[in-house]
Image (tube, rainbow, N blue to C red; front, side):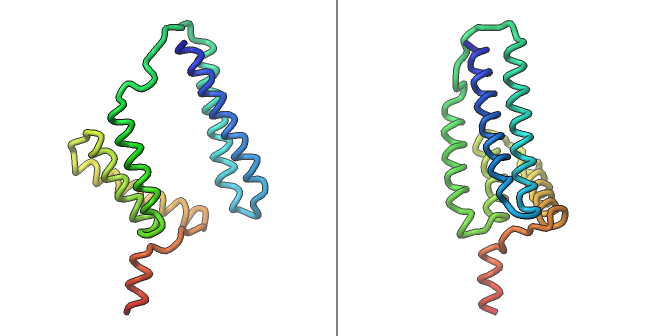
Length: 149
């Protein structure tokens, strides 16, 4: 059973990755490069999961969700994050997600959570704004402050 679950999951990820890469072909210029690469990476990782499962000898059944309360918590926080991206902006909402999710799931090291959040958001900024030269939309709060002053 475990083997079949992993094979199916790997094939699903491969399918999503191929679809994303295929759709990215329609984007003009450099804007298609990022989703194309992500789609190809997802395809490769899905293939690795399926291949590993095919080579594994274990067929023992396993629990589908080992921590349902944590899965529900993560789903609720992810839903709130999606709802906050437009009113707060990507960086603010993502930073709040990076702070809230580990804490809600039980990580009790606020210094580490803050450090990882700051470093991750800095990397996201560098990738989009510097490396890809595709800055994300301006934060809503910054837009309000500049319009008022």
